[in-house]
Image 1 (tube, helix red, strand yellow):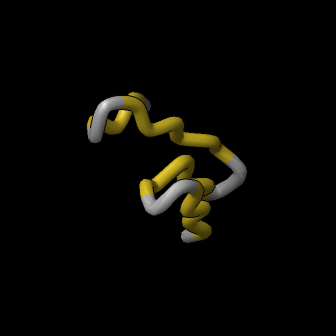
Image 2 (image 1 turned 120 degrees about the vertical axis):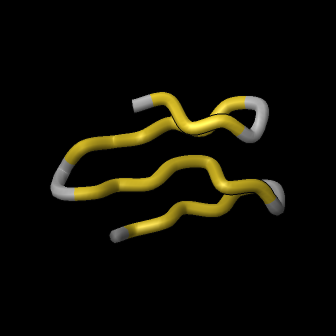
Image 3 (image 1 turned 180 degrees about the vertical axis):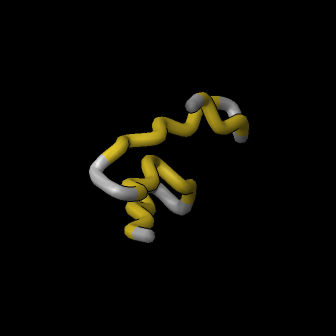
Length: 29
């Protein structure tokens, strides 16, 4: 599990090569 934090917010999470983008505090898979 790789988490990328930008501007104090969770920008994206990379799990098994799949990118999960975070918008408005919600996870879109």
